[in-house]
Length: 249
Image (cartoon, rainbow, N blue to C red; front, top):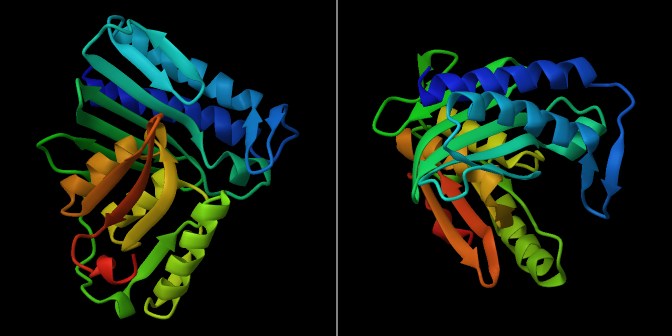
């Protein structure tokens, strides 16, 4: 199998697991103030890891729930086994599996699977991106007043202060605002023209790797700003590449 076919196989297998357990009593490994860690997060990543590394045993894997494989490899799978865990735990059917592959620092494969909607996004570097086998692109909207924006506000005092001010400026300009709880799905929605921007002050690589490749392949723009002293943590501004997002930043 090719890398993208293997990623699709892994994402769909994890999707079956997540659908089977959705709405059931779940084992909580850790209950944080703003997040939840489920035993199912680990189980989902282990399932994904087995499929990816069985096919590509010399590759590295870097996931929200830990690392596996050959960490000296130039090829690295980047995995979020449940993006939107809090939604999932509360029975909100807006969550997904996100799998990306990068060679050195270049993203080359992205797969995002939404088990609730059975929506599958796929992209290979240099090729056309797809949703359920149909070619996709970002929206053609050019005005904030026509746009739907997904803006996060952060959790720290500084991030919350900046985020709320940004949210206020965006709210008076945009057609609608959304806070949806899954970065990967938010980015997939931009790539499909369902949303026009996703802005967040703090996000992790596994949340946005597949989505970044999707958006860039569909004509959008992603700007990442690393957080000092925090590897693979960044702020993000992702758009359709057409709206004047700088007016609300």
